[in-house]
Length: 292
Figure 1: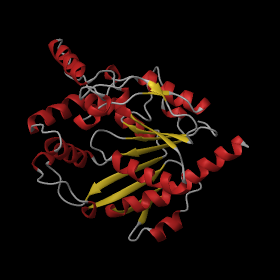
Figure 2: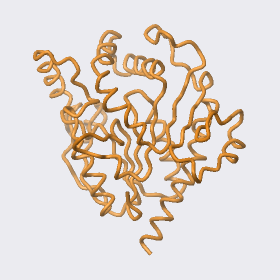
Figure 3: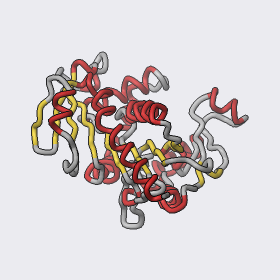
Figure 4: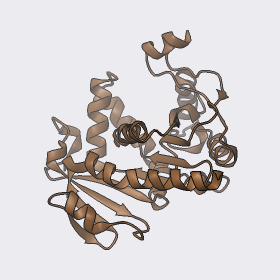
């Protein structure tokens, strides 16, 4: 953790909705004049797309059924921790970019599914913002979470998460349902061991719970909408959180526990603005005082 060079990390699994949180933070940064260095977690995968397919085939041939992007074997946890640590110490660090599609690949004159070369972060940024799978990961050899000043978890209930992944991977990536289900099953041990524990490290968790039947996610015709959901917001440390203000500003909300607010799912963007804008103010004020 650092007063001069704060680190904010959004963590959640594939299809959880972390991109929505990133969009909200980008709006806050623009409005408040915060110059953020934004880093995406897929830059810290160990293998590019073709190499990952080869490694999966090798693992399958060896009888290893659970090789996945959720686990340490396919990721650069040490490099991610180094980025967080070095940035918190000096405001510097080295990153790269994973090229998802043809549009991105053309800009770098590379192939889709490859990484750009490692390069230094821009100088003079106000904070580091990370979105990805492992912003709060802790193992026997690395502790990424301890370097972050603000950790946010995005974790829909599991059936909703699967529905979101099924629909996204079918419509956007063209995968078959069988391939998507195979991926879900293959990732499950790493999901349990490396994704779920992070949500005990996070400062704030957002969990969307559908209010429609999702008992069989594999036959769902569409993704439950925000209006068909409730949002559970859990604060690890409720000290300093103005709950009466939040309850007033979020219609139909209530507290289910002393550190937990429940509100309509459609209020998620508003809830994030109300909660995180003051937190960004605090980080920037602490940074200003440390610099002075």
